[in-house]
Length: 179
Length: 274
Image 1 (cartoon, rainbow over the protein chains, first blue to last red):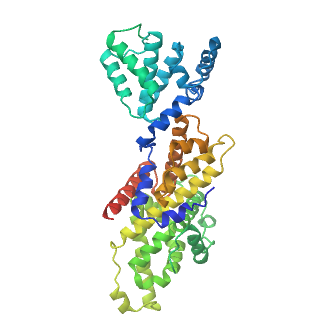
Image 2 (image 1 turned 180 degrees about the vertical axis):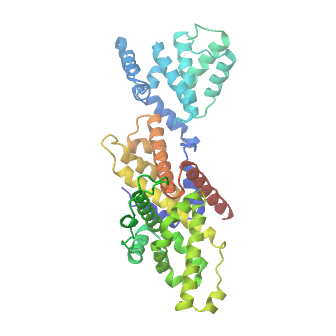
Image 3 (image 1 turned 135 degrees about the vertical axis):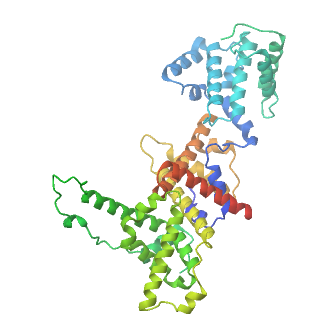
């Protein structure tokens, strides 16, 4: 615990600091710095999927638990899922929907870059591991999105590789059926 | 008296100088029984009395809370009255004529509450000086002429003190709120700590902003969504308390939003001037 006295701090501060407090207290202000994205993405990839995806609704949470533990597979984290040789397509779709919900929600605290990466990584995993297309994005948009994601400086090499393979496949022609 | 630099100092000063009187005239006992067949609207004395008491308590609370900016304004406007500032403010707070209907008049001027309060205080002091001058002038006429009140000169100093009071009260309430979580909010106490080390310490003490990794370790945050939601909750609690503090004097939601914007614009303008 600290002995920080907020009242004393405010009364001895000049207008600039008070203005900064008011501005940073705004919800629309960015929560995280750009240089924190690498740490945030690492955390996201190692986070238990149940923590994030389980918040959709109880039914989804139960289904998620069943899917991730099915057939002796124990898919705990997002990294486990993306880098599994044969991931469950329903799980990838759940991740895609979770990412899209965060991208579309104006009050989502998850940085847009991280949500977008989850979105494209789930599509990439389906494309590369299952030869399936779980997105209805037009080819050009999909390729643009995959390329943008690959170019993020904070991305790990393994995910970059997955995206590169997906880009290659997407560029080579349409695969599977859209959902 | 030296202006207190913290809440304890302010509270001590208020305890010493501010002693509200409790005897209030109640029109209730004087009210005649209204005729049941009267075509005129019945005056509800009980309601009026309740409203007056509520107004009085509200005014007491507001003056108690904004004592420091009011004192700054009073001393800046009437430098010759520096030694009597606390006594005058106490009289201002207790003035019966002022209390009766004052807040209702202020309510009609919502959005300009601070200006209305300043004008009222200035007029109160001028009236006090006029009356005192006749009986037993506390300061010489010569002195008064040398230091004529200047209504618009001290607004900035007053507004800055006002903004500080609003923000200090907001943070005080937020801390108390977060440190007394309900049973269904076991992690709420983390929210204040996260807000403090992530935002307050860097802003006010120039401390380095703690890294994301340190935050997840310290607070056991399970995922970026969990971390973001916790930080967002902190900001929402701050905003909620800020709105409540301001709504107590500014009134309805639109006026509160306008006042928050006005304080923000004022601080940014002042900060740009350095």
